[in-house]
Length: 502
Ligand code: NAD
Image (tube, rainbow, N blue to C red; front, side, top):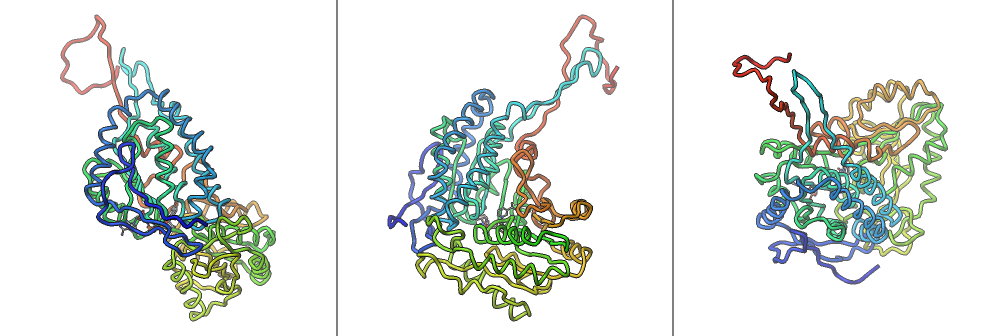
């Protein structure tokens, strides 16, 4: 653990921002609780400067050949891969997740960069010869201009990489507003873009809070906004950006249920529930937060889960022995811990109490809370209703598949879900009926590959466009349809009629 203090500032026009910030925020080191540095918060001036740099870079970048864009993307891919370990350590220090998990998020983000390297193929339009006599029609996909991305703390590299590789490959210029809680990875990524040869102003980073976000949402030169974060803020971003005439996709929070049917392999299900419930201390939008145990598996499943949780090693993210790190801030840790009290007060049973978990070599002033299992949770409890976003796995017991489906249908979130069963027919029915955007069958964290798109349903997504994959290409481009005739000696002269094709 280092003792130095760092200062993080914006990245505008291909270099660190030179000005002085009126406001700054603290960057914590969650494993020790110490303030590891400060981050500048953007006001209207910095937002204007970043958008102006992106706007100035747009004409040149949109006219840069696909071959040249692809070369830069390939170089960026190689640089991120070469610096993956460094990025993972940076993320772990500010977020708290263990370094191997942070390396996993860099790897999943890189998959989107690799997808974007195929941009010449992805941007092909259509062509129809002779739609009318000697008239051809074709479509072309063009970039929007300056687009913005606003991202959450829990994946400081991967979630921005859901957005900017595709946006930039399509010919847009980008302003990223990462989470103020772990801002360093985005600046390192900006440096790698510069090293890859990306022209100045194509990728910019402004740090900050609501003021920076509002600056982007109201800026007339920002054409589209991609957001990932909690549901209340996603709803606000969607409404505000749309009211300002921008294209917007806003991915929100989650409450992911894992349904365990009586015929499931309970060891597999218990391994999956623990891995997906407590990886990254439950601070994943695809974490399993509710296990729905269909009678009679409840007692046996909870026993197997508790046995596995007892063996988990909690400690600083840079200790290779740690499997789970601390939570991101003290305030978040306290909020998550409050659900243990409210759950018990409302009738749940603490099968495992994470407040008693020992911490490997961690200082007691780190933001620690061990993995917790709350059994006999019901739909009316706060622990069920709220997105806890921490290492708390709730177990709801139901008597049948139909009751499980009613529970899922009534839940406002629809990000991810999983079913554990050996019955292919039941799995197929589940996949067909469930109103959730990403489904796992005997797979607990069904994060789609980069060439599919990532996004939930219901209150987990505002807008109609998921992130990355072809939906990303669609979001970051607009289609132009061209009808063309090159004159030949047989053109027919003036005709005021509406064009019909003959
Ligand atoms: P958050 O909503 O608090 O913050 C997300 C971003 O919005 C940050 O950049 C933040 O600075 C900004 N922001 C915060 N408050 C704002 C306000 N009042 N006005 C304008 N901007 C504001 O989310 P978080 O705590 O950083 O991240 C965790 C949340 O993100 C969880 O709810 C999680 O489920 C969700 N998430 C969703 C997905 C998904 O794909 N659906 C992926 C990752 C995380």
